[in-house]
Length: 339
Image (cartoon, rainbow, N blue to C red; front, side):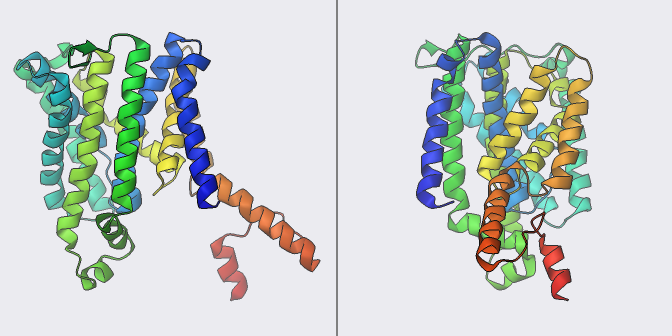
């Protein structure tokens, strides 16, 4: 897809999501689902930055979400900090925790790093549960609706547009980061740490920065989640949320911001559409994950490129007179045939 066509599709998508409240007739359930999607999109993009672009696995990302949510809730409820200030402060505090987590993690990779982040994901909810004097324990906290310069976002439509604007800003910032020198360093580390070191990249520092930046944006989404839902408890940030976010990255596609949107939309809507049938959402989520891994290992975002390749192969077959293959050959099949 050429660059101009890609930009037009982006503009069309933004136009449609701005019109969504009007197109949906202001339905409360649809606005709620749309707002929840925006929150998950930020989390998935931040995790995709870490896994897809940086090659660093994390199975406890819901803990960063919890830190951001509780930081914002405590700042607004206990210290009286306004929301517009609590939002970035929650992000920066979560980034600080992410940097601390990233420091020992720089010496780990693969399943060792996965186990380390899994331990972090288990520890934070338990800590929040035990520290009930600050976090409320099982009773949780009840953050108020966001208020900026005296304007309170009370209705579902107001919250929808607030979350939409923040999501678009985060998307723009992450896109610029990925295309920057730092983003290219992240990709170089993912491809080969030895080659990245030879190029003069400080690998341990950049790995810690990956965790910190990813945690920052996850902390922002945690703050938005707390004030959007209006209630948080440690059970809201268990390991199932971490696995759900990881599944969104896999389903949408690694190292792809549009893929992050697709994964978040699909796996957020499944529970919303099947809430009347207990357990059905888990079955459908698992089925979607298995099908994507089997037939679309590069995620839903690869559907367009696969169709484009099929058309190119069909066109070239018609020109040369060769038979059209039934399926698009994978890279492994091409290598095997060459041997």
